Image 1 (spheres, chains in turn blue, cyan):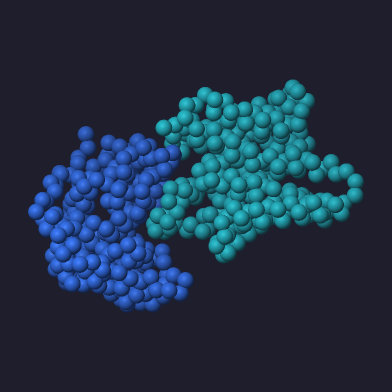
Image 2 (cartoon, one colour):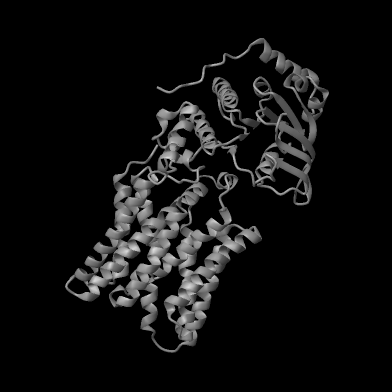
Length: 260
Length: 264
């Protein structure tokens, strides 16, 4: 029997008394890669924060690995972030180690240091371990945040616009890496993105919300559904054209970087 | 100068205060809490005034007041949803106003008051020195035990919260530690100047070192060095020790600014 990693039932979140999310109901199986899409202001980030237990529910129920949000271990989070401050005084390895309870070198112990190096190796940036984190490129910084999430022994990864600001090849690189990590480690992944088509090419299922649940299903079904056009409030031709453009000219899938 | 017992005690106090302010100053600068430090240290004047008027030891009343103000700022800014700057401004000016009113009730010159405002390290007793050492040890232990949490919060508060850090409690603890450091430094440089030791060495260290380990070591070394050099200068020139210590630290800052090229 497939285990459920995340279950949302009739979730309602309010801000200043007004609903930001309402009647959100879905379930994500363990090991599934789910894309969470919707137009601007749809409540995607709020939903991720609700899964993390960072915003209170006005109604409904959320379970993550059978426990209330915020009480379950093994959740890695990659927040929406444009850039790490240039002068932040920590190395890549230090920032990755922040998500572990053992602490920072030289007090992290052998297990902690090994976990940091393993996480960096998995995302292909072990060679950057001692570099100041603020001096990395945007794409490298996203990998640092991914390594930090893996270093927390995550079983569930929640990613909020992880490819924002990246160019197309870097975006495809990132999703390909995420997909291979998800398959290799058996992770459950929920990724928020504005790039519906890029995400649809990698995930097992898509959830589309716009303050309320619109559709949840396999990417091909969702993309061609009437519900997604309702959620985005745009004509079918526009979405179909975008999809045809991407399907007609697939982007090369660069191989996973392995470092020097 | 070290043949005199009072100078030995003064130097020991300068080292203790330097270690505490240098280490804690790293987070004051990293988390942009300089104005918070000013607010807390100046608020302690209200506590000192209360102590002097009521006959309580001014260090004890100053400490209680500074900690209460630190927690009050944390609570009020969270509850009222106001910017911390505005809340600090209210607490800071209210405490200063309380001090002015209380001192106006006292008739005559109060030389002991100036000792708390500008420091009087040469008058520090052996008992006070042991008290400083114990308070400094407690501050450093608490800071070391929660270092990862504070660095994580400085990196990204929401991310730290997502990974289970008790952000509100850590923020309140940091303010309490700043308040405690103000009290520890009160006898060395006074409440009006202690903020300088919390900010200047850490700011200079941030200009030279890229990693927090280097910044911490350099910040502590600069704070201790400023204390020792300032004391020596005060002895040689027969000037106030507190002011001399802060001027040495400030000279390091301006020298760094003139030597360092702007970062890209």
